[in-house]
Image 1 (cartoon, rainbow, N blue to C red):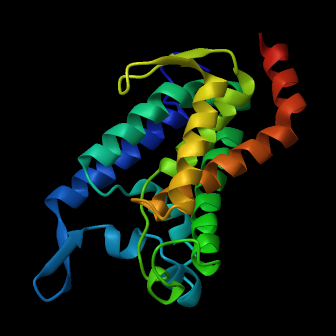
Image 2: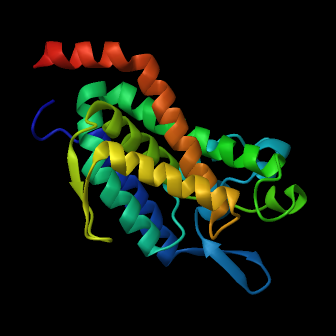
Image 3: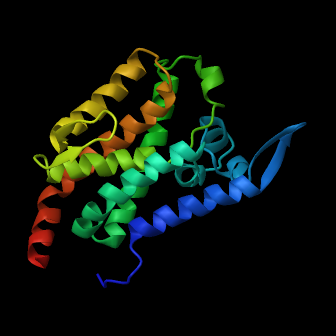
Length: 219
């Protein structure tokens, strides 16, 4: 990869930031007296809009939308930190496919939790509730990092602790699982996180030897 080449990770970050900024300056009416960021009405994922209305692009478009600035900053920071390592090992095209597939898996797992009654509200309500964010994709990337570098150490800002990537992966999966099964705050979002993490692990189990051998051959 050339030094000045725009990476997939940086491109994803730029797209998410631009989409968010456009949404800040351009609002569109969705009901009397109610507006939403420009791309939200056509981009968010919900089971109803995606599968009942057949708007399947939402499986991908929702991954580039964020609810607020904090949501955006945390996701982009994690993508900036973890993404380049996985992109280098997988290569640009495979990495982009991995990112998008983990995001799709997050949306589908969210739908699964809806229809199995695992989330707070009845399915008749939950199918309309929107989901946005790159978190499912990023959880897949974090799990891939833990899979390839289990003993690497990561220092968190909050809480201020240091742990191995293996421990970090177990912690984030554990938190998501507990919140889902206890119907805690943002259980729907955590369902998306867990779906992305599970898909990331499954892909790494399938690609393990191929990815590692290709990486070693490039060194």
